Image (cartoon, rainbow over all chains, first blue to last red; front, side, top):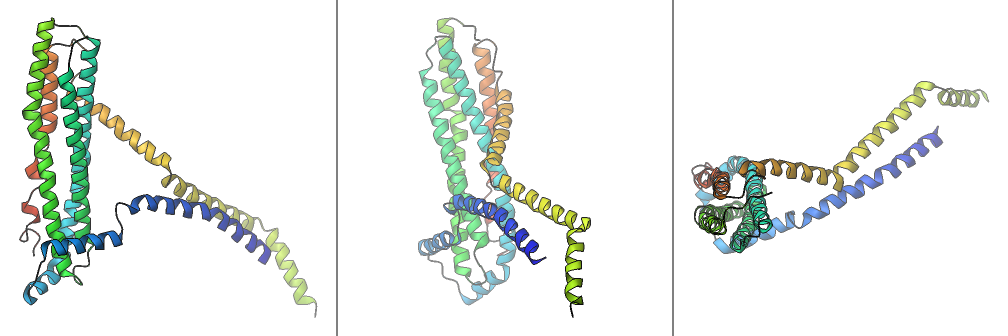
Amino acid sequence: MQKVILLIATFLCALLIPPVAFAQDGSLSEIGSYTDDARAARVTKLRETYRITLSDKERELVVSRCKGAQGALSKILERLKTTRFEREKTYTSVISALANLKLRFENAHTDASNLDLLIVTYQQKSTGFRLSAGEYETTLEDVIRVDCVFDPVGFRAALEGVRSARKDIVGISSDITETTKSTLPTTFDSLKLRLSTDGETSGE
Amino acid sequence: MEKPVENNQTEKELLRNNPVFIITIACLIAVVMSVIGFLAYYNSDTRRMVEQLQINNQQEVVESTLAPATGDLNSAYINSLEDGITQAVEKHDDDTEFSSSEITDSALGL
Protein backbone atom coordinates (compact mmCIF):
# COMPACT_ATOMS: atom_id res chain seq x y z
CA MET A 1 0.00 0.00 0.00
CA GLN A 2 2.85 2.38 0.87
CA LYS A 3 4.40 1.80 -2.54
CA VAL A 4 1.15 2.69 -4.25
CA ILE A 5 0.81 5.90 -2.22
CA LEU A 6 4.45 6.81 -2.91
CA LEU A 7 3.94 6.21 -6.63
CA ILE A 8 0.80 8.34 -6.74
CA ALA A 9 2.47 11.11 -4.71
CA THR A 10 5.47 11.14 -7.09
CA PHE A 11 3.14 11.25 -10.07
CA LEU A 12 1.13 14.14 -8.61
CA CYS A 13 4.30 16.08 -7.74
CA ALA A 14 5.55 15.66 -11.29
CA LEU A 15 2.24 17.03 -12.57
CA LEU A 16 2.12 19.94 -10.15
CA ILE A 17 5.58 21.33 -10.93
CA PRO A 18 4.69 22.84 -14.36
CA PRO A 19 1.69 24.91 -13.09
CA VAL A 20 3.83 26.32 -10.31
CA ALA A 21 6.37 27.34 -12.93
CA PHE A 22 3.57 28.84 -15.05
CA ALA A 23 2.27 30.78 -12.07
CA GLN A 24 5.71 32.18 -11.38
CA ASP A 25 6.11 33.09 -15.01
CA GLY A 26 2.80 34.96 -14.89
CA SER A 27 3.69 36.97 -11.83
CA LEU A 28 7.14 37.85 -13.18
CA SER A 29 5.61 39.86 -15.96
CA GLU A 30 3.75 41.95 -13.41
CA ILE A 31 6.76 42.74 -11.25
CA GLY A 32 7.56 45.80 -13.30
CA SER A 33 4.11 47.26 -12.80
CA TYR A 34 3.33 46.53 -9.20
CA THR A 35 5.12 45.14 -6.16
CA ASP A 36 5.04 45.95 -2.48
CA ASP A 37 8.62 47.24 -2.62
CA ALA A 38 7.90 49.49 -5.58
CA ARG A 39 4.81 50.81 -3.82
CA ALA A 40 6.77 51.54 -0.67
CA ALA A 41 9.37 53.40 -2.75
CA ARG A 42 6.67 55.44 -4.49
CA VAL A 43 4.97 56.33 -1.21
CA THR A 44 8.30 57.37 0.28
CA LYS A 45 8.96 59.58 -2.72
CA LEU A 46 5.50 61.15 -2.43
CA ARG A 47 6.08 61.74 1.25
CA GLU A 48 9.30 63.61 0.40
CA THR A 49 7.51 65.58 -2.31
CA TYR A 50 4.53 66.72 -0.26
CA ARG A 51 6.18 66.81 3.20
CA ILE A 52 2.90 66.33 5.00
CA THR A 53 2.78 66.88 8.73
CA LEU A 54 -0.21 65.79 10.77
CA SER A 55 -1.16 67.00 14.21
CA ASP A 56 -2.18 64.37 16.73
CA LYS A 57 -5.82 65.16 16.16
CA GLU A 58 -5.46 64.93 12.36
CA ARG A 59 -3.54 61.69 12.71
CA GLU A 60 -6.30 60.21 14.84
CA LEU A 61 -8.92 61.33 12.34
CA VAL A 62 -7.08 59.76 9.42
CA VAL A 63 -6.47 56.51 11.30
CA SER A 64 -10.13 56.21 12.27
CA ARG A 65 -11.56 57.04 8.85
CA CYS A 66 -9.00 55.96 6.28
CA LYS A 67 -10.38 52.43 5.81
CA GLY A 68 -13.67 53.90 4.63
CA ALA A 69 -11.79 56.24 2.31
CA GLN A 70 -9.84 53.30 0.89
CA GLY A 71 -13.14 51.55 0.19
CA ALA A 72 -14.41 54.58 -1.72
CA LEU A 73 -11.12 54.81 -3.64
CA SER A 74 -11.39 51.11 -4.56
CA LYS A 75 -14.70 51.85 -6.25
CA ILE A 76 -13.11 54.75 -8.14
CA LEU A 77 -10.32 52.41 -9.27
CA GLU A 78 -12.79 49.81 -10.52
CA ARG A 79 -14.69 52.47 -12.46
CA LEU A 80 -11.44 53.87 -13.84
CA LYS A 81 -10.53 50.48 -15.31
CA THR A 82 -13.82 50.39 -17.22
CA THR A 83 -13.44 54.01 -18.32
CA ARG A 84 -9.90 53.37 -19.49
CA PHE A 85 -10.97 50.32 -21.49
CA GLU A 86 -13.83 52.21 -23.14
CA ARG A 87 -11.71 55.25 -23.97
CA GLU A 88 -8.83 53.22 -25.37
CA LYS A 89 -11.35 51.37 -27.52
CA THR A 90 -12.69 54.68 -28.84
CA TYR A 91 -9.24 56.16 -29.54
CA THR A 92 -8.10 52.99 -31.30
CA SER A 93 -11.21 53.01 -33.48
CA VAL A 94 -10.70 56.71 -34.31
CA ILE A 95 -7.11 56.03 -35.39
CA SER A 96 -8.24 53.03 -37.44
CA ALA A 97 -10.97 55.07 -39.13
CA LEU A 98 -8.47 57.82 -40.01
CA ALA A 99 -5.94 55.28 -41.31
CA ASN A 100 -8.69 53.76 -43.41
CA LEU A 101 -9.59 57.20 -44.77
CA LYS A 102 -5.93 57.83 -45.63
CA LEU A 103 -5.84 54.55 -47.51
CA ARG A 104 -8.93 55.48 -49.44
CA PHE A 105 -7.39 58.80 -50.44
CA GLU A 106 -4.26 57.00 -51.57
CA ASN A 107 -6.35 54.59 -53.63
CA ALA A 108 -8.10 57.59 -55.18
CA HIS A 109 -4.67 59.13 -55.96
CA THR A 110 -5.54 62.23 -53.93
CA ASP A 111 -3.00 63.84 -51.66
CA ALA A 112 -3.95 63.54 -47.99
CA SER A 113 -0.61 64.13 -46.33
CA ASN A 114 -2.15 66.43 -43.69
CA LEU A 115 -4.13 63.40 -42.51
CA ASP A 116 -0.83 61.80 -41.47
CA LEU A 117 -0.25 64.58 -38.98
CA LEU A 118 -3.72 64.12 -37.51
CA ILE A 119 -3.21 60.35 -37.21
CA VAL A 120 0.15 60.85 -35.48
CA THR A 121 -1.42 63.43 -33.14
CA TYR A 122 -4.15 60.99 -32.13
CA GLN A 123 -1.61 58.19 -31.74
CA GLN A 124 0.58 60.32 -29.46
CA LYS A 125 -2.34 61.52 -27.38
CA SER A 126 -3.78 58.03 -27.18
CA THR A 127 -0.43 56.75 -25.89
CA GLY A 128 -0.30 59.68 -23.48
CA PHE A 129 -3.76 58.78 -22.23
CA ARG A 130 -2.77 55.14 -21.74
CA LEU A 131 0.29 56.16 -19.73
CA SER A 132 -1.63 58.71 -17.65
CA ALA A 133 -4.41 56.22 -16.97
CA GLY A 134 -1.83 53.64 -15.92
CA GLU A 135 -0.23 56.19 -13.62
CA TYR A 136 -3.59 57.14 -12.15
CA GLU A 137 -4.41 53.47 -11.56
CA THR A 138 -1.06 52.90 -9.88
CA THR A 139 -1.52 55.87 -7.54
CA LEU A 140 -5.00 54.63 -6.64
CA GLU A 141 -3.64 51.14 -5.96
CA ASP A 142 -0.93 52.72 -3.79
CA VAL A 143 -3.36 54.68 -1.65
CA ILE A 144 -5.68 51.67 -1.35
CA ARG A 145 -2.94 49.24 -0.32
CA VAL A 146 -0.92 51.46 1.99
CA ASP A 147 -1.35 50.52 5.65
CA CYS A 148 -3.12 53.75 6.59
CA VAL A 149 -3.54 52.86 10.27
CA PHE A 150 0.17 52.27 10.68
CA ASP A 151 1.26 55.02 8.27
CA PRO A 152 -1.33 57.85 8.07
CA VAL A 153 1.25 60.31 6.68
CA GLY A 154 2.07 57.86 3.87
CA PHE A 155 -1.65 57.50 3.19
CA ARG A 156 -2.04 61.28 2.99
CA ALA A 157 0.95 61.58 0.67
CA ALA A 158 -0.38 58.77 -1.54
CA LEU A 159 -3.74 60.57 -1.70
CA GLU A 160 -1.97 63.70 -2.91
CA GLY A 161 -0.33 61.50 -5.54
CA VAL A 162 -3.79 60.41 -6.70
CA ARG A 163 -4.92 64.02 -7.00
CA SER A 164 -1.84 64.93 -9.00
CA ALA A 165 -2.23 61.93 -11.33
CA ARG A 166 -5.89 62.83 -11.89
CA LYS A 167 -4.83 66.26 -13.19
CA ASP A 168 -2.57 64.58 -15.76
CA ILE A 169 -5.27 62.29 -17.09
CA VAL A 170 -7.78 65.14 -17.25
CA GLY A 171 -5.20 67.19 -19.15
CA ILE A 172 -4.55 64.54 -21.80
CA SER A 173 -8.27 63.77 -22.12
CA SER A 174 -9.01 67.46 -22.68
CA ASP A 175 -6.24 67.53 -25.30
CA ILE A 176 -7.90 64.71 -27.22
CA THR A 177 -11.29 66.42 -27.05
CA GLU A 178 -9.72 69.70 -28.16
CA THR A 179 -8.00 68.00 -31.10
CA THR A 180 -11.34 66.53 -32.11
CA LYS A 181 -13.03 69.91 -31.86
CA SER A 182 -10.40 71.99 -33.67
CA THR A 183 -7.73 70.04 -35.62
CA LEU A 184 -10.06 67.34 -36.94
CA PRO A 185 -12.56 69.75 -38.60
CA THR A 186 -9.71 71.85 -40.04
CA THR A 187 -8.04 68.79 -41.54
CA PHE A 188 -11.30 67.41 -42.85
CA ASP A 189 -12.22 70.78 -44.36
CA SER A 190 -8.95 70.81 -46.29
CA LEU A 191 -9.60 67.24 -47.45
CA LYS A 192 -13.08 68.18 -48.66
CA LEU A 193 -11.61 71.17 -50.49
CA ARG A 194 -9.03 68.93 -52.14
CA LEU A 195 -11.72 66.47 -53.17
CA SER A 196 -13.82 69.21 -54.72
CA THR A 197 -10.75 70.59 -56.49
CA ASP A 198 -9.76 67.22 -57.89
CA GLY A 199 -13.38 66.36 -58.68
CA GLU A 200 -15.25 63.92 -56.51
CA THR A 201 -13.75 60.49 -56.82
CA SER A 202 -15.56 57.24 -56.37
CA GLY A 203 -13.97 54.99 -53.70
CA GLU A 204 -13.67 51.21 -53.52
CA MET B 1 2.05 -15.79 15.17
CA GLU B 2 1.78 -15.57 11.34
CA LYS B 3 -1.88 -14.77 11.38
CA PRO B 4 -1.56 -10.91 11.54
CA VAL B 5 0.88 -10.94 8.59
CA GLU B 6 -1.46 -13.07 6.57
CA ASN B 7 -4.34 -10.78 7.42
CA ASN B 8 -2.29 -7.78 6.39
CA GLN B 9 -1.43 -9.36 3.04
CA THR B 10 -5.05 -10.31 2.49
CA GLU B 11 -6.08 -6.71 3.18
CA LYS B 12 -3.54 -5.42 0.66
CA GLU B 13 -4.77 -7.83 -1.99
CA LEU B 14 -8.34 -6.88 -1.25
CA LEU B 15 -7.47 -3.21 -1.62
CA ARG B 16 -5.63 -3.79 -4.91
CA ASN B 17 -8.52 -5.74 -6.31
CA ASN B 18 -11.13 -3.37 -4.96
CA PRO B 19 -12.67 -1.55 -7.98
CA VAL B 20 -13.99 1.29 -5.82
CA PHE B 21 -10.47 2.07 -4.61
CA ILE B 22 -9.06 1.97 -8.14
CA ILE B 23 -11.87 4.18 -9.49
CA THR B 24 -11.42 6.66 -6.65
CA ILE B 25 -7.71 6.96 -7.41
CA ALA B 26 -8.45 7.36 -11.13
CA CYS B 27 -11.04 10.06 -10.41
CA LEU B 28 -8.62 11.84 -8.12
CA ILE B 29 -5.95 11.85 -10.81
CA ALA B 30 -8.50 13.06 -13.38
CA VAL B 31 -9.55 15.94 -11.12
CA VAL B 32 -5.93 16.92 -10.46
CA MET B 33 -5.14 16.80 -14.18
CA SER B 34 -8.19 18.95 -14.96
CA VAL B 35 -7.13 21.53 -12.40
CA ILE B 36 -3.59 21.50 -13.80
CA GLY B 37 -4.95 21.88 -17.32
CA PHE B 38 -7.09 24.83 -16.29
CA LEU B 39 -4.21 26.49 -14.43
CA ALA B 40 -1.91 25.98 -17.38
CA TYR B 41 -4.48 27.51 -19.73
CA TYR B 42 -5.23 30.37 -17.33
CA ASN B 43 -1.56 31.30 -17.17
CA SER B 44 -0.82 30.69 -20.82
CA ASP B 45 -0.35 33.17 -23.65
CA THR B 46 -3.19 31.42 -25.50
CA ARG B 47 -5.78 32.79 -23.08
CA ARG B 48 -4.32 36.30 -23.35
CA MET B 49 -4.32 36.02 -27.13
CA VAL B 50 -7.97 34.92 -27.17
CA GLU B 51 -8.93 37.85 -24.93
CA GLN B 52 -6.99 40.25 -27.13
CA LEU B 53 -8.75 38.88 -30.22
CA GLN B 54 -12.10 39.40 -28.52
CA ILE B 55 -11.15 43.00 -27.70
CA ASN B 56 -10.00 43.56 -31.29
CA ASN B 57 -13.28 42.18 -32.60
CA GLN B 58 -15.19 44.57 -30.36
CA GLN B 59 -13.05 47.44 -31.66
CA GLU B 60 -13.90 46.50 -35.23
CA VAL B 61 -17.59 46.74 -34.38
CA VAL B 62 -17.05 50.20 -32.90
CA GLU B 63 -15.01 51.23 -35.91
CA SER B 64 -17.84 50.40 -38.25
CA THR B 65 -20.12 52.78 -36.34
CA LEU B 66 -17.81 55.76 -36.97
CA ALA B 67 -18.30 55.66 -40.72
CA PRO B 68 -19.13 53.08 -43.37
CA ALA B 69 -16.03 51.32 -44.72
CA THR B 70 -17.35 51.46 -48.27
CA GLY B 71 -19.17 54.02 -50.39
CA ASP B 72 -18.14 57.05 -52.39
CA LEU B 73 -15.26 59.11 -51.11
CA ASN B 74 -16.86 62.52 -51.09
CA SER B 75 -17.69 65.44 -48.79
CA ALA B 76 -20.75 63.67 -47.39
CA TYR B 77 -18.65 60.67 -46.44
CA ILE B 78 -16.05 62.87 -44.73
CA ASN B 79 -18.79 64.76 -42.88
CA SER B 80 -20.31 61.53 -41.61
CA LEU B 81 -16.88 60.33 -40.48
CA GLU B 82 -16.27 63.63 -38.70
CA ASP B 83 -19.61 63.36 -36.94
CA GLY B 84 -18.90 59.76 -35.97
CA ILE B 85 -15.48 60.59 -34.52
CA THR B 86 -16.73 63.68 -32.72
CA GLN B 87 -19.62 61.83 -31.14
CA ALA B 88 -17.40 58.88 -30.15
CA VAL B 89 -14.86 61.16 -28.45
CA GLU B 90 -17.36 63.51 -26.87
CA LYS B 91 -19.46 60.74 -25.35
CA HIS B 92 -16.67 60.45 -22.77
CA ASP B 93 -17.22 63.13 -20.16
CA ASP B 94 -14.02 64.15 -18.36
CA ASP B 95 -15.88 65.88 -15.54
CA THR B 96 -17.90 62.78 -14.75
CA GLU B 97 -15.30 60.11 -15.39
CA PHE B 98 -12.39 61.85 -13.63
CA SER B 99 -14.29 63.98 -11.17
CA SER B 100 -12.14 65.91 -8.71
CA SER B 101 -15.00 66.19 -6.23
CA GLU B 102 -15.03 62.45 -5.51
CA ILE B 103 -11.46 62.47 -4.20
CA THR B 104 -11.80 65.45 -1.89
CA ASP B 105 -11.38 64.91 1.85
CA SER B 106 -15.05 65.47 2.49
CA ALA B 107 -16.12 63.02 -0.24
CA LEU B 108 -13.78 60.39 1.21
CA GLY B 109 -15.01 61.05 4.73
CA LEU B 110 -11.65 62.24 6.01
